[in-house]
Image 1 (cartoon, one colour):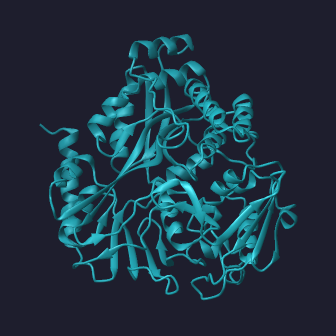
Image 2 (cartoon, helix red, strand yellow):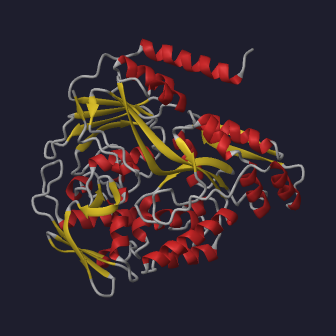
Image 3 (cartoon, helix red, strand yellow):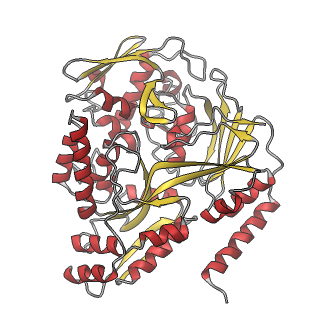
Length: 529
């Protein structure tokens, strides 16, 4: 009998055979070849704009920041380019002293002018991640006065309101806080774009690597920065959407590392000494965004009915048992204040009753955007089946990750299944994204996830912005816990799963680091025997 599962297996086998015809020789010494799904990169690799998982990894290896997370301790920060930092008593002025002798990949010294330029271009360009910096009151009109360099080794930031220095530092540790070489970028600027067009496919940083090339949904190539001297001289990342092709390539020696194996494949190779498995629970969530522009999804009863219709445990157990864990709050497990309680279980009768209460006893039809690659396509099919049980009929719209992301950023979706990763290791990173929408207009400056869903939430916005100013750590945690509970019951977000990254390497590879957040994944210490 021809079933959907047997068809998928046949398709995977065919893909593997086709890939085998193109298989490469063993990877050369000094070159790390990695296979992963990189079609999420929708905006290039400029740190002022890039806001996707794969792009974050590249930026974390190509650029440096004033401060960074201590390896293995994401809740701890240490100086990267900055030697010291201090704040005034009012909490509105912060001074950073740069380390001496720091250089970019060009060999030019890192100066405070480069830092100021990097932050100012983020503010001026106002791309997707800019809200992380803008939230301190920086605008294109005031950035020249509030982001300054008194001398070549000093940077001063003046915030609009009193700010805890620890919170400021966490925000500056995000990928958008990367420091670019001013002269190199300005030389490539066109039409007042601050070099944005050029930096999409080039780099001007001081990290372990430089960007040699990026071809969308195809490949990324990084070359070692000779002033940083990583152990591997070149990193090649190939877009391989099919997990079966990834595993075949790893077994043949075409790849040194693969990043998207399915749960059954992980189980299959777990006891094979030809491979190593690096497992890391990441601060990444998989969720449904329900656009409040849709007349049906805007009804509170409908939002709750959808949350009650899903078989979270069944999806996790049957599709992604080793690569995702059930999680239903906007703070991923591991971040301070994260809720681990799971209030939603599949309740078809209860969900139908809520639809009837909303005046929709026969359900309705709505479009559903999702990533077409595994395992997301299988999760999407399960969601379709679950919602059909309550009369919600999904028009399935599969696409590449980048296309789905672009559509949600433009507020053109109805229901979309997307991923979100914390930008920095503080509760406000996700609280702001999921719970703040101070301006719901199309021209809003702060385009959070709540904004993308067209969700106007004055009360939660106010509480979230108050939480970040709370000085008592325990009270702050309690505020975030209460916020998450209310968010679960009110929001148009169906938070389903938290990612467990399983990077599989050949036995010859050592030192590869998978970070809790994307830009903490490190290539520079990797070696091959």
